[in-house]
Length: 296
Ligand code: SF4
Image (cartoon, rainbow, N blue to C red; front, side, top):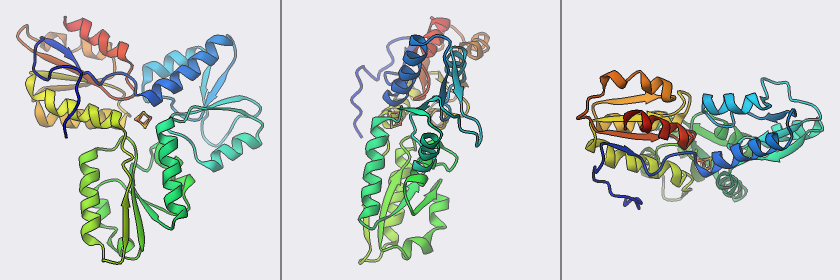
């Protein structure tokens, strides 16, 4: 794949930031909706259906101005509720509406379009095989949306689904937007190799460009630097993937949540070291820039 970087991939500076850094558009939009609502209504609360972003620092900041995460099975009554960027299942939305809540839809428009396509495939008789992590809110939303969906986390799980594959006439392969694209392609290959001629197969390109470009950039740039910092929450799946990819390319990779954690590595950095800094889709650009400032 050719990646249209906005900059050179040669190492020209001692400290470089990844071009594809900062919030993805979906997270940025949801954070903006929350912040806008709360800043215009000081003292009021805004409920959100989950972590608006997998980033402890951003969650702390929003919580301090009135954001409240809905916990467990106790939906609020008569409040304003922001749907997180990953979306929610129709049954969760139904309960919120029944409880007289006012809903602000923060679902990422790219995901919304994916969900519509998945639903259309189901209406056309396709059974979806979803490459995703069961506990991820995006996967939970898709599971709630479709009547019949088979989830697999990785190639190993997919290889154990042979019977389900062979007994499904029409298969739609779909993916969580932040799963690794290489593994998704390998999943498609594995599925296609098992199919009988009469089975129909379609693959949805539902992995987001924000994910693909970050991964490609790390793969191409990490070998050019002596140290890589990946910034992001320890619960962020796409950040973890960037860390794993960077470790395949560079011997010294540090996964840090914020500038304070990065500060702990200052003593290990030599003047001759070259440093690349990147981050997951839920890491704000200012966190990455703050770490850059540490090493300049
Ligand atoms: S990664 Fe892409 S699809 Fe997922 S929330 Fe961000 S912009 Fe939307």
